[in-house]
Length: 183
Image 1 (cartoon, rainbow, N blue to C red):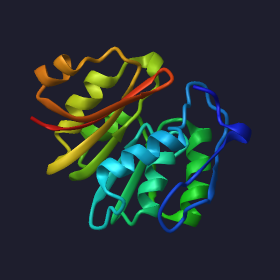
Image 2 (image 1 turned 30 degrees about the horizontal axis):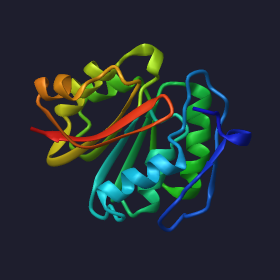
Image 3 (image 1 turned 60 degrees about the vertical axis):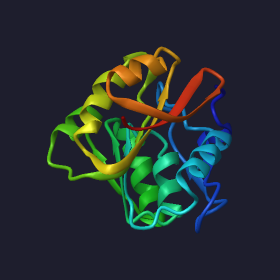
């Protein structure tokens, strides 16, 4: 997937539609493209009122800030890279959302409360999907959904074996993505 021009992405819907998010070039950072975010938020419903959202491995914050723009009650953006966090904090100061500088897996082990929507898009090179999904399951509200981006190495059968139901799925370039709920 190509790196966005000028290290920026734009919010595609909601109250902040059209606003550009600026971020530093960080190794492995792949902002979710506009087309994929549009698909995801069509799957979730355009409005996220009263929903608590977690953008794990936030990177550019494209998913979390899109949720803020669509009225989520609370959005937590977790990122371990200091430069990426600095950019997230600048954007959060304008748009809203709470930025936490932490390792995503460590964050999920803490007392974070429950989330209605969890966005999981870890660095592909680290292969954290299984660990992230297992820990996210402990933080997912009863009717909650998980959005997962991966490199294609996860099959629906493997996800089902771990107790997940694939509600929707798609592909954009090298990224595969799906919306999950507990089976």
